[in-house]
Length: 336
Length: 46
Image (cartoon, rainbow over the protein chains, first blue to last red):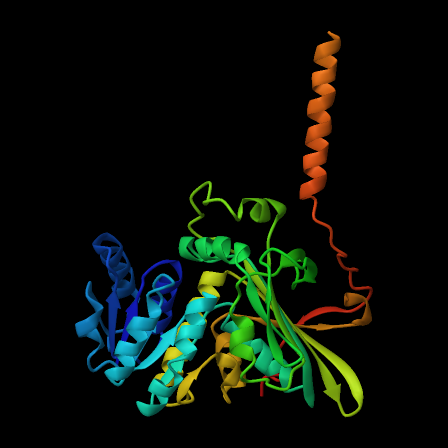
């Protein structure tokens, strides 16, 4: 089966490397920049197993035909059109977009995905993506989920850093008591404790897509929120253009998900977290999601990873590939 | 000299006012008093 990967930035190159450690027979890499394409193609071919052919193309459209899965790792704003084309062509699609508007557009392709009998995996990166798997796993420890709070820190490559910059200045949606509420970006400071040694960071609201992906899976939850770590300088400069070029890799980063609900009559809180390089972890998540789609383990339709019945298996596979999840155990009443 | 001192005072006051405006308040949090993070093992995921 052929896997087509478009977008060979920081996360895209990690996806390509992860896909070389898989039974995929044909891997097609696509990027509009010839120099970057040649560079990544050479690096991936050097580590690809004998059974795998790796080719590079500049134009995505002909490569989609006959592909088993299309993995979209290009810049935000390019995923919807490519996803619709791939679904029409009969391919599964995995998108790592973390742009809230684009995530909403991709979720709206659900009917197209269902009519094509294909899976459109939305937000299969670090956060959303790995965060959705953590929420799904944490929810198995509760009889009823009332509150979901997602926190993230750190960025992947330059495109991710630009998205982080944009996210902070735009309002984001939160699910509160059965309705969507628009919250101002950069508001709602909350001190979140991530796994050590990452530690505590101030986190703020922004145009984050996690609530959009989690709400359909937890329609009975009273509150679903997402916040991202930012410094005062980030907030102060969020209204301005980026004053300096972003780092090649903005890691390490971290995720914290906090679920409150009930076990029987008792109120319980479950906290899970991850500390890793966002581009590496996102690459691993996207590659495993693509393999799951190829093997028919991805649910048909458009959804995030929180809705996958095999979320626990994905977490176990991630652990085998070095992405370690941590659980917080202790007295939780002090955590606010 | 007096004018210079006034200007310095004015500049410092203005800087303080701007800093106060941009210092955004929040309740913060309380560090965990007990417990800690532990790695989720394969057993937890089976």
